[in-house]
Amino acid sequence: MTGQSYVVPVPKGYRVGHWEVREPLASGAFATVYAARLTGERAPELPREAALKFLPTGTRTPRQLRHLRELAEREVDLLGRLRAPRLIRMYDTMTVDAPDHPELDGATVLVLERAEGSLDAVLERTPKPEAGPALLAQICEGLHQLHHAGWVHGDLKPANVLLLKDGSVRLADFNMAAELEGTHAYAPAFATPDYTPPELLWPEIDERGTRIRPSADVWAFGVLAHIVLTGTFPLPGGTTEARCDAATRYARGTEELRLSPELPDVWEEIIRDCLAPRHAERVTRVPDTPALLRRVEQAAGTARSARLPRLRPRRWRRPVLVAALAAVAMGAAMTVTYTLRDQAPAATAPPSCERPVVYEDGKHGHGYTAGWNSTWDFTIAQGDGGSQVREAQCLLRYLHGITEVGEVDGDFGPLTHGAVVTFQKRTGLDADGIVGPKTWQALRKAKEA
Image (cartoon, rainbow, N blue to C red; front, top):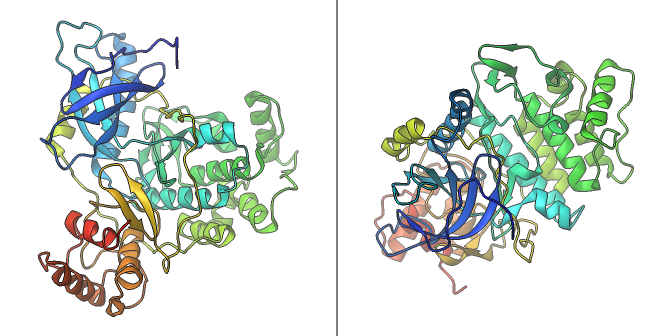
């Protein structure tokens, strides 16, 4: 990024809150993202490294501020309310108080989970990556978690898929996300055309925005999957405009969908169903993301993720969130992608439940994973369900030999509760049957890594 100008120039070594700014990661029209490291020991609940998204304030016209405020509120609202393993995490929000630095004074900062890079950057370096099918399974799992919580992403594309150091996937950039109201949601009246279904290329717009449905994300996933597996768009055209024209003709029935002959039959069927030309036909072929996820996992040959009986929104750091909604006036309009370092992140197939493998966590160091959840502080208890419950069951059974955990089914029932209590007693923890940060650390640190 040498020679590039930044919306919010922040000198290396500058401190904001508990964080020391390091090198820039990305910059767009309305925000700049910097790497940062934690200073001191005053915030043990925070990771050692994070990404700081700096948003300038008070430098736009009133019309821009109104528009960008809506986009910013969408992202902050979703990140503040939802905690799921495949969604990027927001740790904190801050406002810079630096009257001696006019270019920084008043800037709003989002403290985000640090990623090594975006899928977009990976594809630029390595079209058709070997780990593509496994990555698609994780992306689909993230989409399932988002839909299960009642949200539509609205702008799923490679630039909005981030990879952590261990190669695990996080969905990010939720400024276009919308919460469902029944079967529909209302989103801003624009998205990335190459990933927009035909019915939304020229949508009807009212005072609430564009009415969208989860099937829009299904279409976007189909386009993304075709690009990951073949390196090409599924519709012909050398430009975005030409591809949009092709999508329109396809929706009208005057042009056929011509998928790459490189696709294996199972993936061709999945992508063809995701790219059904009309919403009604799409939901017939792909009724929901749980059904899609099972097909994708089977095609990718990855371990089956657990079902999600319920996913409780987390009102985490609520006082800070309220302040952020008032302070964040812009910046979420940019699409944040984290530029890769000299080496692409190691993106490998997820480990099996029966054979957990070692990975590197930015805060805790080495630890075992049985499903790339990278979860160290996501609290689960009896009555919960999901992929993080499944991973705890895998670690209990196959890393610690506690077979009394019962079936590895992703449901935190009485047997799992009893197995957790047994493990906690064995390791000298409070035997409350709740898997919180200390129990996760013990589960992952049982063997020398």
